[in-house]
Image (tube, rainbow, N blue to C red):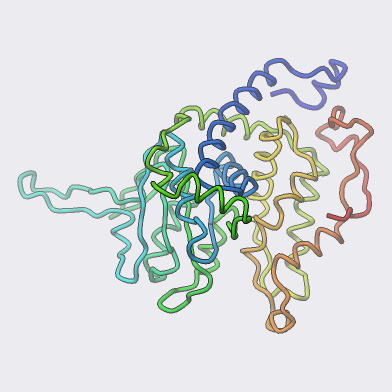
Length: 357
């Protein structure tokens, strides 16, 4: 991928090789998005965020009330990609070995044989993740962070691409265990599906009133195509002022008076990777502050813990993130609307006052 300096040295002419890669990315993403949206009516922004997390090599937490399509979204995303898929129904009696696998004694071989668990898939759907005990939830920690599982001293690599899509219900809390901070911090983004509009709900009745929309859903992208798109996202350039902007936003959460727990350094990495994926989905080989702003709430809010006083004042983590975005100065772009000429040293960026979102 060309840098800003390379583009500037060619007079700002678009790089043809990247254009071809960008066209391929757009074509694959369009197919996957159309496939998922054929199941999830009237929620294009939710589908887009799901694809952003997939290409940024993250994990997605879908949190909302029952019946709005949380599991349907996870299944539609998984079935639209020709990858191995496993679904785990989290229950209070679920054991860690049900997720990671277990070594079983083979009498014929007179040796232990490892039986892989449900985590050994490219897309893992965890339904109602907060209904399992903390002991079982902790079985996901190593796999989500390191893409590997260690059983009886032996480490097994997980397939690539690898993504955990988990759902949870924030309303019915009886018989549930809140996700520990370490678990929530491993999810790149949290999304709420929300209720559909009356028009989308009416269309849902017309199209899906007779059969399940998942029955006819076929893969529209292969795993190797997703891996190529992930490599493309990794190569997206982020200028120094944009990286500094990401750090300033995350650092502000650690000193905000309404928060007793701010975002971690892992959150900084996740926000940067998500911004790069968003830039690639927009057909750009460079990330902008707008990409960071658009994803800040989804990436940061679920990691933050408001103080008791903030909760009494009905202050949510999302409101705090929006306030931080308003207060943090945004890097000012140079007079190149496409971003051409912004070098790795931060050329072309000044500082400007926060913009209203």
